[in-house]
Amino acid sequence: MRRTFTIVILLLSCLLTYAQDIEVTPKTKKAIQRKLIEHIKENYVFPEKVEELKEMLAKLAKSDEYKKANTASLFGRLVTGALREYTNDPHFNVLYNPQMFGPLQAINSGDEAEAQRLSISAMTGSSPDLKKNFNFQKLEVLPGNIGYMRISQIPNINQAKPTLDAAMAFLQHVDAFILDLRSNPGGVGGFISYLGSYFFPAEKKLLFTREFPAYDSATHFYTEPELPGKRLEKQPLYILIDRYTGSAATNFSYTMQKHGRALIVGETTGAGREGGHSAGGYALAEGFIATVPIAKVTHPVTGTDFGMTGVVPDHETDPNDALNEANKIILKSFIDNESDESVRSTMQAALDQLMETSKEDDDKEKVDVSELEVFVGEYEGNRSVLLEKGKLLYHRMGQSKLEMAKVSEDTYKLVLPSNVRSAGTLPLIRFDRGDDGRVTQISFVMEADGQIVSTAKKTK
Image (cartoon, rainbow, N blue to C red; front, side, top):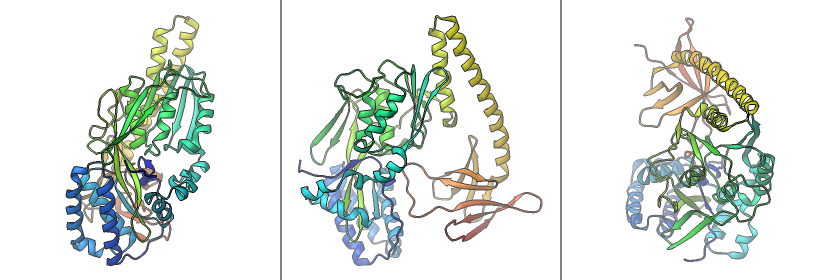
């Protein structure tokens, strides 16, 4: 394997964003295409499919859509979409990011001194992670002495280790542990083996392997024999997931589940995609960069990954209720196995309170769902608003359905899946009503400049 300083990360697309848009000339497109094919040929996780990809990209370059994509955002979105659709892998990206271009160029060329000078934090955007407490959103001890940790995105372990160790120290005396990875898009893969170490005995255990077919090599990820804090190897571990749990977060869930160390609660993560891969970052031309899937994850127990099946929960439930569901399961287990009557009574009181709260939430949800029905219907421009499993969805013909989250009365925002990035800021969706209170149209509102585009609701 040739020596490379390519940073192997999961879902790099979620970490790399750049707002500026520029004009892209045919000459630039040609240079980008040439470098993209070169990096795919040298690094792609499926070497046997390289020729197919080259033919697909050559055909794309001859299309009218390609010729008309004359801005960085349009061109990047077009090529990214074509690669993802053809390969079924969301780890492909082509985008304009001059800030990342120089560092990646140095790393790709094997400039060891320059690569070492550039810290990993500069490569993966962990400076913003520092301002977000490395994405540790919540730590709590729930009734019944159940630890709860919410991580919104997987950070770089080189920077986040002290924060993780402190978080685990805070929860070191709990009797059970709930890790919330719902809507976590992934991040830097090294974090998950370190976190996983806290839930196994102090021994070296193979968690998973990352294979690099193009290099004929593999990297093995083991538990840490030594940790600065207390291990929770005997405490029950529950992991919460949903369809937006992605990449490294999915890998952690799958790894712990298949080792028999965790029970998964929620809904199946995105299935039917080549999602069990790791991506390398590469400089293309004129400030454009790419991420290319270069490795596949395999589990020592199953011999495969979660890519095409997704992670299937042990306890399937509405992801919005996953925390309550995990809490109930743990409390019921504690009650069944507790001989001390006073402790059982305390646990039962906590469970009763949780059940009552869940009932109140269910009643509120029924009211909320009925209020959403007024928005449902067909709109001009091949648009529609749907209500599925209590969730409001926006759909435009030929595109994926997107969940809508309430911002204020009659105003919603679009929620992108974890493996999708937007080339620009998404508009708010405002439902406009007539004098009779019925919805007459959708207005797409751009917050930045106040521009509004409206489309009428069709009448039956």
